[in-house]
Image: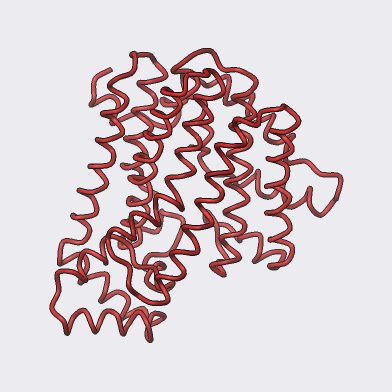
Length: 331
């Protein structure tokens, strides 16, 4: 497929090679979310009704279809990934004290922190039960490593945010653990569900890391935008003392007085919208966004280079389209 066509692919275009599989997955995922506890069932229904684009299960199915027909294990992998991802989002909102998710009230906003934590635990346990009941310890092994990595990344970010000493190398380590590890697990479990070839599984896990890195850098760039369409307020990372790539790069460029002003604002006046907007303007004016975009494309190109080794197929074309969509999306 022509690169221009891949760049213009919509989510529906990307889904085409696995459209039937994704439809069946929706049913299986809803079933995995059910509970006999009325309150829990009400909350999981709320989550399902407000689901995102489900890009992570899409990575699972497209990866699987590149190497063979989709198997029952592929549905298990996709459900496990989506249950885990949903659980982490619910827990993240508690950790971040966030009251919105995808433009709607978060679980902790509606049902308070205690219930939100328990809902996240339920979703995680459902994923674990799903894999053990199917005896897919291989899938569980890949995803468990991702959970460990995500937790370590979150804690590393909290530690470094307190000290305000995040370097560019530390930033890459944080986003690899927090975000890229899960995308890597999507691709790894997708491959593992249809092949025993460890080289293929390792290659796809590597692709997932590169895509996840690019995906997170794109998310961090959004924080410096002014769009109302991204599903979260701009400047929120600054307000939460999260130093991301655009700002880290600019802090290395500006003079000592400007650096001191930025750090002091984040420490003491991070809730002042005027001062936060001033930091956003400094980042944009000093090339922070352009630098981050260049790094994002570097990771994208690393992923595409790995995929070049693989045979062409409609699933591979859609996978490449999904990579481009991940970094060109508007929200």
